[in-house]
Each structure stands twice: as C-alpha cells, then as structure tokens.
Length: 549
Image 1 (cartoon, helix red, strand yellow):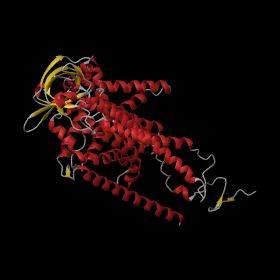
Image 2 (cartoon, helix red, strand yellow):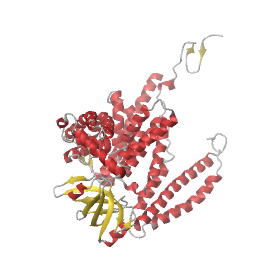
Image 3 (cartoon, helix red, strand yellow):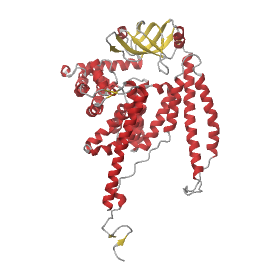
Image 4 (cartoon, helix red, strand yellow):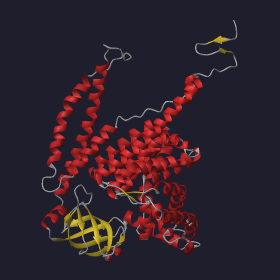
C-alpha cells in the first residue's frame, strides 16, 4: 500500500506531513455562558427592590400578598415541571420532531426557578418589614419625640467638612430605646462630639429620630442636636478591630522616613489595607473620587480575592480538603479584621465568586456562582437591593468575568498584547460600573482607566504589607513601621497620580443625570463594543478568505 493518502479537500498526506485544514486557521469558538441563574437573580433583585420600598404602617402587607400570589403561581408550574419527561433519545431538529415539547419543559422549569426566587425574597422582605414596623425605633420615629437610645458604635467616625459646617458620620447598632430592646441601626449625622466615640464604644444618646429613606438599611437618622455620652470603651470584636487600626496608624506614622511621603499617603495605608479611610484628607479623597479610585479604600471582592489567593498559593503543598478548610478560616479572619459589616460580607461573597472562576478556569462556573451569591445576599438582607455598594460590586464582578477576555482579544489592535492584558481588567470593571456611577455623580471621567491602570500594580503590595503590619503592630510596632514603608511609598504614588490626573482636562466631563444618563452611557458602550467586534470578525473573515484563496 502506498504511504501517500489523499484526503478530500487536501493534497497527498505522507507519514511525516500534518495537513493544514481551513478550520485550523480560524479562532476557537468562545466558551458558552451559563446564564441559567441570571434570570432568577434578576427576579429576586427586582422583588427585593420593590418590597423594601414600602414604609409606614402595614408596609409588610404588600410583599406578603405578592409572595402568596407567586406561591399560588408556583404550584401549577411545579406540577407541570414534575410531570415533564424529557426524551431519552437525541433531539431531532427536523420538522415534526418533539423539539417543542422539550423546549416547553425547559421554559416551565426556568419560570419555576424565577418564581421561587422572587417568592422567597418577598417572604423575607415581608418578615423584615413586619419586624421593623414593630421595633421601638419605628415607634420613636412615628411619635417624633426625643428618646434615649443605648447602642454600640459600629463604624469609625468620619469628618465631612463643608463651607457651612463640619459633620461627623458614623453608625450605631441600637440595643434599647427608652429601655425597650431593639435590633435596628441608626445613621448619625452629628457634631464633633461624636469623634470621642470610637468604633466599638457603647454610647447613650438623647435625640429625636428622623425617618430614613425607603429601603435604607438604617431605620432612622440622628441629627446634630443629639446629646451623646460614651458609657463604655470599645470591647469585644469591634474593640479589638479598633485597637488594630489604631496600632497600624501609629506604626505607619512612626516608621522610617515618616515625614518624607506625600501628604495623605500614610493615611491611605489603613484605608486600602483595612478599609479605614476616616483620617484621609478631604483633597485626597476628592481627587480619588474624580478619577474613580475610591474603590481602593473599600473592602472589595478583589481585595478579598487577593488575600485568599495569596493564602491558597502559600498552602500549595497542603491537600485539597485541608487547604479548603484553611482558606475558609483565612476568609473568616479577614472578615473579622476589616469589620464584619454588610459591605465586608458582600465583598467576601464577590471575592469568593472570583476565586470560583479562577479555580475552575472558566467563566461558565463563575457566572452561576455570581448569580447564586446575589440571591443569597438578598435572602440574608433584602434591603441590599437598594444599596449602591452591592450594585457596584455585582457590576464590577460581572464586568470582569464577562468582559476581560473579549477586551484582551480586541485591544491588541491598538496596543501591544502585554499592555492589552493589563488594560482589560480595569477597562471591563470601569465600563460595567460607569452607568451606575452616573446615577450618583453625573460626570464621566476620561482619566479613570489610566488612573486605575497606574494604581493597580501597587495595590497588592499595600494590601498585603498593610495587613501584615496590622497583625504585627500590637506586638512589635517598630517592625510593623519598617514593614509598611513600601506601603507608604506605594500610597504616595497613588496620591500623586490621583492629584495629577484629577487636574487634567476631561477629568470630569458633564453627563445627563439619573436613569436616562445611565442608559445613554450603557448604549454608547454597547455601540462601541459592537463596532469593535464587528470589525474584528470582518478582518478574521477577510484573512480566512485570503488564506483559502
């Protein structure tokens, strides 16, 4: 038999020859996206948004009625889904086959999951509204009279200076209202006397409680007329966290070359490492807000993923199951260290989603985890549906998961490939968050992506050395000061680029406010991406035709 073999569409093939097929020149097909939980997550979010917006007496009745209605709808859907038997043989797409029957069963199952997710969130929301309506804080707001509140400060007081006055922002977890037990939270917009109430301190205040906004996590507001008295110093978990933050700030301020850094750099170290930005100077805060760098001082999912990823890499030789247990312990310790609040728990969930995607090596595993995380967060606290922090966290995470790979393939047309891979992540996150941010601040920053790109390389250094310094400072302050010197230098770099880029033209381009502005910006982004993808496909098709010719 001859050694040469002739295959259709190719020339003779010998033992040492590998034919080049036309399909080998084309790009691999994109990985399919698993969006099965996207619709249930969206339904749960919409239900929570609507439900927690009800305030006043009887606010729980509307969510409860909607939950009963959806529960009644779920019964026939459940029966129909249970009776559905998908065909055992391979589906035949030819006319007259049973494809429509299989599709109907899938649609019923998808609708059932959406209805159940929304119904569960509505039940939790109704219970939450019912509990808040019967809380002593709600009664005090309704009466409009001054009451005596005893509670624990749960946030480090932060000063906001304006041309008219100085306001101190903090939060209080209520224990009693005129002696009656309560479990609600208060937002304090007080005077400078609140600076003497550190996080973890027990306070007694006399004030008239004002109503908070619809859907707010805090049940009421405390104004400047409140009289506050610290009755006990910080203790427990919050007391320990407060001590670590103070020790870190002192160690950074007493470290080598402490006075050589750019103003605001040393105050930024606890902000990035622990989310403690109360001492950050107002000009630095404004510059970082202008160039969209304020997320660095919030404990984000990327922050949690960085710490957990480093810990898992360090435990590379440990077997898989013990490593998973140790990773969970690291996550728990981090949540406690940076203050176990709703935003930190949200960041832990989003960070875990990112790690699931990294561990699985594919977006199809991370997207269902993101949607499941959203549903879990809304079941734990439906009022997070109206929280800007959750919206930005989900948008940034989804942007990173969905947009990083396509952008890494598109950007090499204009920039070198290594730079394109560095740009892809901040561009994807910024593009996903921009329409949300426009609703809050109607400006578009042209220098936001360059600022994030320049700051990104030093953020892991600040995070890891800052956390290590916080753990070392109570035992060896001098060593903690030396350890955090690189973090101070990195923060000086971030402060410098924030100031320089915030002063450039185009740092804050006016944009229409509210939902119309957000939709317009999203439409512009989609249009640019569609044009870029279309041009890429045309170039690929032209290249394939040239090779085939």
